[in-house]
Image (cartoon, rainbow, N blue to C red; front, side, top):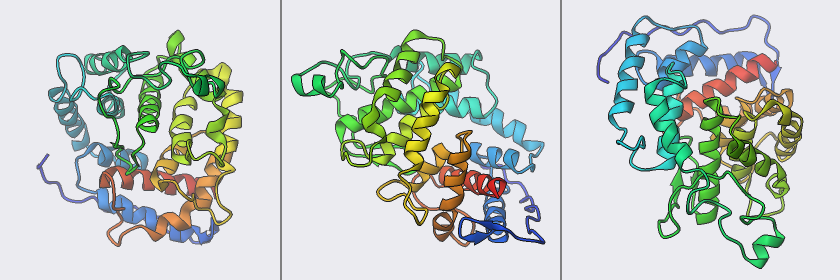
Amino acid sequence: MTRPHSPTAPPRLEAPNPVRTGNLETSDTQRALARAVEWFAGRESRQAILARQLTGLHRAEDHAAAGFAIRETRRQTRMDGSVEGSLVRTAWATGELLDLGCRPDDAPVVRTLGFVLSRQNGPGHFGEGCDPERHVARLCTHYLSGFFSAGLRDEAVAPLQFPCGLTIHDEEQARFAASCFALRVVLRAGEDRRDAVRQHVRCLIDLSVLWQDDDPRWPLDLACLALGAITLGPYDLREQVEACIGDVVARQAPDGSWPGAELFNVLDVLAATPSLRARAAVDRTVPHLLRGQLSDGSWEGGVKEERTLIGLRALRVALRAA
């Protein structure tokens, strides 16, 4: 996408009577938000389009830019509906299409989502098989169902990278993470009535070790990936999901940081979670978030535009919480 446009001036976000958000005044948060908005001005990526929608700066040209991005995603899709045969990349492409205004029953989404769903309970999924140790831990095929396969067992999945900057190096953790990532977009597409999808959600809720902070097999980043999926789950499971949200929020350090976790992975989930506890946790994280913001308003690492969009969303959540 090389068509240039004149940058759109960011809105005035100064507050005449600042209040506190986290350990900062609202005016500091607003200025940080304005810098992020300005960084996106004139860009035509999916993230830039969404950033303008979030801040009320939608341009007439964004409709054409979205159409171009949709066609580019379709061009990258193979005959089987996948992007490079990858579960995570295909799930990501499906989410991009939904972000750009495609409906779940539109042809591009039907193709990519079809590939994702075809991997459910497929060979190589997390929890496949059984042995005495895993059976006792309820981490085998007798207890886990509905998980998506990122590849056969003789195909290495790790290291697995996500656009927010998170990289998972452990093989089993990568297979778990890939499945949660796929489940999130499947639920976004409204497929929560499928029995296998509901089973996946229930299994994640039942994995109580996910929400504990003393098991190195289940770092906070994995818990957040699971939480990002189950918060979109069936309504009748929402009460159990709310308890999981509280368990994850409880792992935030007193200073508002998230030790041992990728900050943008945590914020990506919590900023999108319709929970007062999640929003309060995002608010407490703002000082750490702003320390990493560059002078041009962006954040480095991972996919830079994706991380900056996550940062922008988190700042908006913090301002609303104030």
